[in-house]
Image (cartoon, rainbow, N blue to C red; front, side, top):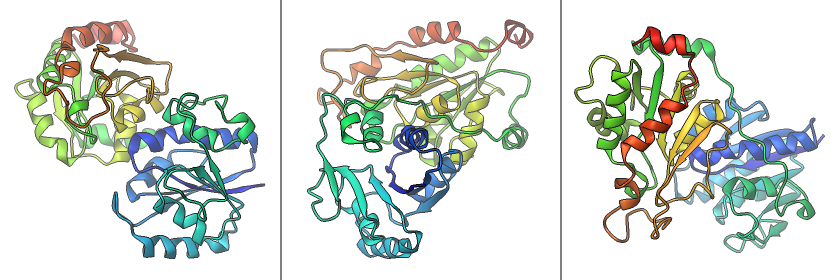
Length: 347
């Protein structure tokens, strides 16, 4: 029985995709124990992964060095006697906790020249490991099987049905209408954001078709959520800032479909089995696709994209602006998972 400490990524979507690594470890060694170090926000997500025993919170902010904090955490974990550490981020600081925990085998990519901190530094072949999920999973297998690692197992977050029902009641959501979830935020930057008026047009269409609309996001997305649902009536709900991340898991599992920018919540929706409409432009579905068979990708594939920039270098963001709502509406209409009889009763 091997005991693993995984240093997880700092983004919601990446942490969801990391479950593929955890699943692969469990396939190769069903008795393996897996603990994951991550930011405080990640604990509720990790709690919904059956492969993970403990979520260990690293009390540092995003981008913060926090060397003393990492040293103290590492030393506190020595007594766990982990056999192996896998460090998913490529930064120097991310390898400190396993080093101070004195874990004998510490694996990661070369990154920021982590010669002492890691005992095995692997070369990142971006041509073969051409997706984030492949990079994560490759670190959990022997080098001979890592390029590329097979199989890739889709993430699957567990759903709390009781919490789901409580949320429907406490947020005054309709239990009689199917829901379309909209996720308009994108932490990376505005180049990844489909225009709010496009989201509004989609929301208006489905309200008229008998659906309810849920706009999901964090507190910073509240103002955008208000713009999206403006004038749409009682069945359009701006839930931005009103729910925790763990609540979003359960609400997305209830939704008929999710229409989203390339964001963390898109990956959450994919991991609970909801049909995902992923909107791409400045980023690529070839690199960070929603890991599910139930997905529709919307991408104009302009000559200038993907640029992977936070702001459009050309100043027009045509990869987002020119992707018209009617295209998403048509595809969404064809992908409803609700029974026809249910849809007819709510019209």
